[in-house]
Length: 391
Image (tube, rainbow, N blue to C red; front, side, top):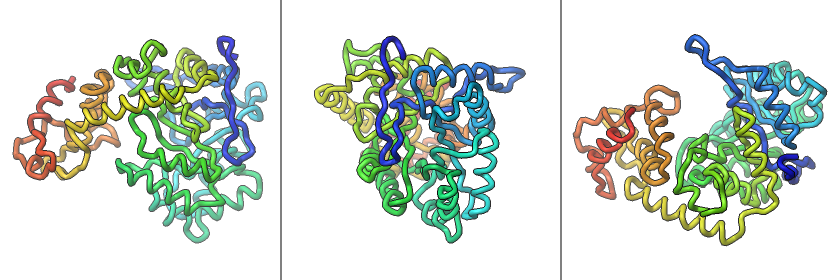
């Protein structure tokens, strides 16, 4: 129970499993800095997992590389303590590094050891693209063949996949649908990103639900973007919410094609706030959803005044990813989540997902503006972006 509210549960596709509307993502477990290094706090992490179970959460998602490769280990210890393993559903992942069934099984064995369990409830082909599914997962004697055999043995209870195709735009959702079609009758659940600001997989999620797959959403608050204080976001439900995160999470949970929203939490306070939201029985009403969608369309229109994301301006001779930089700028300009925008801008060139130059690298050559179908003043906008967001 949480503040007098009981966690809500739904059928997880056609798997026969009942899952909590809120799942705990074990990617951001409690940590602290020591001698310039991040150290994950095992004691606090286990207490957080135990509190999640007390609040009714029964779906826990982890992966081999999360938290410096400690996430599976910590989750395993937390579930062994007090005999909690059989009270929850465990989701973890297999990075499809090649098309070898033997290597796939070795990686599974390592996860079983880390988690101190003899089976995985929902085992994902991790972050696969359509190409990887067709040419690696479905290879002769490859991971999919091995997964079927392991399911027959009861080591894998349900065959799942997570989808991270990096291309923006409607084609991303179309590739998700193609994976679903090519895995029909075998794939039982899907994990993908969806939130107020990332909705291009909406049709794919609907298709998965229609086909009977369990549907799990990662990033319901946009990896923290939508959790930052934003009056723009809170005004989507004026006077009815306490935080931007509440708007974001309620929007995701109101989508009837979605079973579970994963919350990657690092504190009891975050967990309890999200559990309270997921425990509510009053979904957003049709007029409320219409209000949010109308405001989203207006915000998208405002964002497109700055950049439509068509990518015709690329490649930049100095390696600037112009559309990505303008997306970051729109976190500030349109959604007023300036702190997150500045933090994202500071990551440029420093993280694997932002390997490009920031706006300061612009040499004023004008090549981008000659190719822009909207005739946008790209050089001036780059200068403005750097001036506003550079720390």
